[in-house]
Image 1 (tube, rainbow, N blue to C red):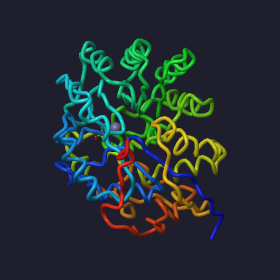
Image 2: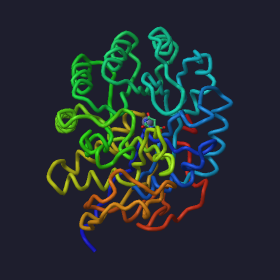
Image 3: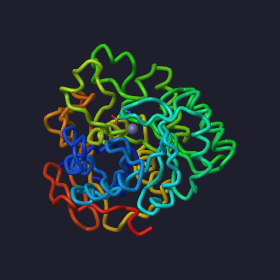
Image 4: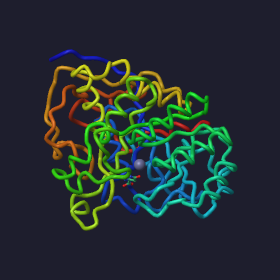
Length: 358
Ligand code: DOR
Ligand code: ZN
């Protein structure tokens, strides 16, 4: 047994757990099992799984299912739609972790591409919770202008280009209420890996260049990047081999091992990892985690990532074959051990809505 360390409660504010109409890809039980096996205390689920979270009825449908099935704590996003659904905001605000707007095309039909509608959403949102944005490059610049105008706390998801890092650095210097997250696939893979990975390397935003990847690592070192988010988005291997393949990759079980490997290699400090997977996400989303909630990792265990040992329903990873250093051996939530390094120790429904009492 090697060096063991205890990490504070880990929160991934950007996952697509599936369930409901897409339960064949993953469900609230299997994908939250993946979360606790990945060391996470809580995950925040995106609204694009059908039926999309565009109104109170769809939200209730999701809340009921996730409440019955989840094994980790959780939150769910509401979706800012092209259908101008802002009249729903007061009806849902107490039960959600934040609002998500899809400003560029991706999985699901939730694209908001009309600048007037984007602005109306900013206007109507009360700003009491995070407004999370899929906004690539020029769209990121446009969203930053709306943040300048409306001053509502905004999180730019899956930042992956040098341009985005530069725009966000400037926005932060200007004092705007803006934060951002980066995904492991953009930190460890580039366009060059597509020859090897094929559609298993397809996600939105796409894999980028080496220069972009270098800018992300620089942003991590100098503090522009606040959060590491997995963008866990399972599709079955069969779906991924279809033409065209859907966009998205699973990531909940590989994020922490990859980050600990970067620590082992001297590319990151452990303190910076803890900031980006625990302290910053909790601060940005305004959460005080429950007591007796932590993760124990063994820093001296090294293993090769293999799909069939993952808990996610789809059992594959774009990182398959990589050797990582550091393994989750215990996850504890609210005083209960939920994971022992191999097995899930709690029943579906153990997980609680982080925002239930707001
Ligand atoms: O690659 C992606 N997959 N990007 C997204 O924005 C959505 C996600 C999904 O739901 O599959
Ligand atoms: Zn996503």
